[in-house]
Length: 208
Image (cartoon, rainbow, N blue to C red):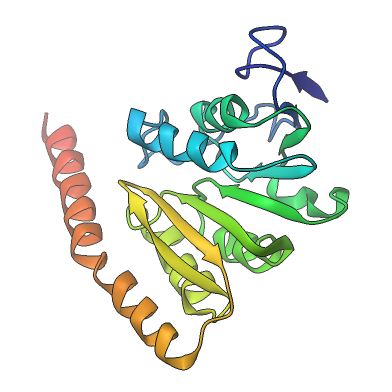
C-alpha cells in the first residue's frame, strides 16, 4: 500500500489529507482512452473546492480509472484529518464506514461501470457528493450512469465541468426527479457531439 501526503507526491508539501492508494492492475490509474487523462484547471478546482468544505473526520474515496490530477486536487483541498483513499473497484469490502465524497473514474466496459455504480454510491452519506469523470463523454460509462445513479431518487444531478459530472445525495420527490431527469437529458446533445468528434478523429487516423 502506497502512502502519499501533501499534493499527491510522497513527502511533498504540507501534510493535509493523507492518500492511501492500492494499485489497479499494477498502477493506480487506468483512465479510459476516450477521456483526457489529465483534469483541466476548472475540473481540478471543482474537486479542491468540494474537499475544502469537509471537516475532520471525513473520508474521500476514489475508484475506477482515476486520473492522477484527481487525487492531487482532492488531497490539496482536504484539511488535516480528512482521509483520501484510492481503491480498485473490487475492493469495496476493504472499506469500513461511510464515504463523504466519492470520485468514480472512467470504466471501459458497461458491465464494470454498472457494477461500480451499483456497489459504491450507496456508501455515500446523505448530503455527500459523487463525482463521475467521463460522464456524457464515454458511451459505456454514460449508459451505466443514467441507468443507475441518474435514474435513482437518491441522487440529484448538480451539473458538470466538461466530462466531470457532480451529483448530490438527497431524497428527491416525484417532481424533483422529473426536473432532474430533464437536466440530465439536456446533456445528451453535448454527449452526441463528443462521440461524433471521436469517430471523426478515428477515421482520420485510419485513413492517414
